[in-house]
Length: 174
Image (cartoon, rainbow, N blue to C red; front, side):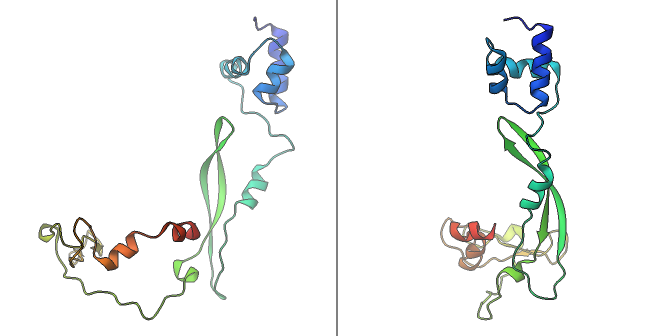
């Protein structure tokens, strides 16, 4: 199949209208979807137009995350660029995300017992000590928990509960 000037112009027109490569191949006849994609790539055509106008504003409002907020608390809204698959291509879009501190999501229980750490430095850790880091590694007072940990486990039972959440809780937190 030869790409005549007429067929190339029709390809450009259909591509700018937002038709998929499969739809264009069907309208041109005698050419595969992959041939259309290859020709579009060789012509360096821009991404397809979206049918029905711009969806980036609609996607941005749909993808705004929110969580229950405590009254009288000022929250921050930030914009983050994310990538997502759109058919055979990956697109980048900006998504507004609302920052909600974790204490707003889950009330803190007053009956939590935090174990005293043994304040070990890196050279004092063994296979049976908790390796949970405490503090800023760049500061002098940085240390590890150092409490006894079960065999072949990096953390004590308290820090293991923090590190390894059940899958149901991880899904809820997203």
